[in-house]
Amino acid sequence: MTGRRPLRASLYVRLSKAADERNLSKQGMVDDLRRLCTAHGFAEVALHVDDGASGGIRNRPAFKAWLADATEGHADVLVAWHVDRLSREGLNVAAVILDVIEGKDPETGQVVRPPVRLIGFYDRLDSADGEGFRLNFLIKAELARAELSRMKSRAQARVRRMRKEKRAIGGLTPYGYQRAARGSLELEHDPVSAPILQDMVRRVIDGASVGSVARDLNARGVLSPRDHAAMRDTGQPRKNKETGEPLPRQAWTDETVRRMLTNPVLLGCLTEDKKIVRNGDGSPVRRGEALISDDEWAALQGTINGAKRPKTRKAPDALLSGEVNCPECGSVLHYHYLVKPDRKQEYKYYRCAGRTRKGNGCTAAALRAEELEQAVTDFILTTFGDLEIMKKVYVPGDDVATRLAEVEERLSELREDRKAGLYRGEQGAAEFREMYASLEQQREELEALPSRPEGWKYIPSGRTYRQQWNGADTVGRRKTLNEAGVKIWAAKCTTDNASEILTQLQKLPDPPQGLIGMRDGIALMITVGDDIESRLSGNPDAVAQWGPDSDWETPALKLN
Image 1: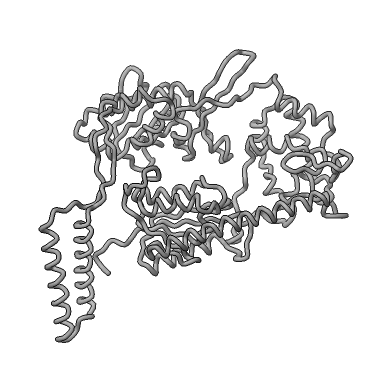
Image 2: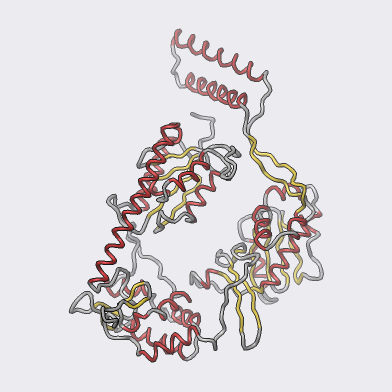
C-alpha cells in the first residue's frame, strides 16, 4: 500500500565458530533475512552481527544492540534467522526476549513501551501468531539449550580422547614452529618465524617492554602469526572465506606478544590452555625441540612478571572509560592506571583502544585522566547542571485509541483497494460504499468518546543534573552522562597542532548542541542529547557560559 510508513526491521545474525550440519554462512543468513523483509514490505534500519560468538553467552554486543533497537523505539520488527541463533540458554533468555517483544518492564512486568514483532526465518516463528507463538518459542528455546549441552559433551569427550592420545587440541601451529615432515603431530623450528621469536625473547629479557616489541614488529612489516601461517601454508595472504578477497594484515599488539611469550609451548611441550600436558610419570609431553632454554624461559617469565618493572594494577572504576572517542581513528578511550613503586607515583590516563588493543596504527597520545574528567565535569555543571531531569516514560493508549487507529487503517485499506480496482461494477461499488459508511459511523462514535493515544512523555523528576551529579558515585555519574546523551571526543594537542586537531573535530558528523575547544592541552568536542538540546535552545546563553574563560587556551566554539 502507498502512503503508509513501512515497519522498521532490525536484523540479527549470529555465526558461531563451530560448524553444524547446515553449513551456515554469515552472508547467506543476511541474504535470507533481507529477502524476508522485502517479502513483508519491511524497511531495514539495522543489521547486527555476532560473528564467532557462542549462543551460551548472554551479553553478546550485537545481540544486546538488537534488543535495544526494540526497547529504545528504533524498530517495529525484530528479525532473526533461527531461535538457536538468539540464545542457547533456554527459558532464561527466552523470558528476556518475550519481555522485549511485549514491551514490558523486566522488573514489574508492566507494559512500558510499544510491543514489537519477532519473526524467525528458518523456523518460521512469528509473534503475530499469538499464543501458538509463545509455546513454540519456548519449546525451541529449550531445544537450543539442550543442543548446546550435547555439543559441550561431545567437545569434552574429544578433548579427553586427544589428551589421552597425546595430540594437540586444535588451533594454529604455534608461532616459531612448523609441522615436521615426518609426522603431523611433531613440530620443528620454522626457519622464518623461529629467529624472530627468539629475538623477541632476548629483547624482553634485556628490558624492552612487550608494547615496544609489538610496535617494532609492526614498523618492520613482520607478518603476524595468522598472516605468517597463511603465507607459509598456502603461499597466499589470508582471504575472506565468503568472498575470497584478501584480508588486511593483522597488526601485532601488546596482548599478542605477551600471550606468546608466556606460553610454555616455547619449551617444545604439548600445552592446553597454556598449561603443560604431562605423561603418567609427570614428565612433559614433547612435540618438538625447544625454541629457548629452561634458563631463558625462567628469565623471560621473571622479566615479564618481575617486581623491577612498573606494574599495572587493577584500575579503579573511571568516570570516562569507554565514554570518550578518539577523533583520529574513532575507537573509544580506555582508562589506564599505572603505579611505579620505586618512585611512589601513580599515573592515571586515558589511551586510545585502537592503538593499544586493535593495533590499527593510531598515533593519538594518552590524556591525563584528572584534566579530561574535570573538563567534562565543568561542561555538565555549567551547561545544564541546573536543568531539572525529565524522565521519559511510555504511556499506553487506551482501548478507544487502539480501536480508532484500527478503523482509520481499515478505511485507508479500503481506499487503496478501490483505487487498485478491486470494487468494480455496480455491485462492487455498492459493497464499497456500505463498508466505508459503516466504518465512518464507527469512527464518529469512537471520536465522541474520551481517548488517550499511546506515546512517550516526559515527567519531572524533582532533581537537577547538578544534584544528581554531586550525589552520585562514579557509576552513577557515568549513567547520568549516558541518559543525558552526552558524547565526547578528545585528543591531546599542542600549540603546533591545535588548529589541525580542532579542524578534524569540526569535520566529524554534524553534532547536536555542544562545544569544541581546547583546555589543558586537550582538544574536546562535547555534545548533548535531543531533550537537553531542545531545552537549552530556549536559553541560548546557557552553552556560551561554558568558556571561553581563563582556563581555555583556545576559545570554545559553540555548535548550532
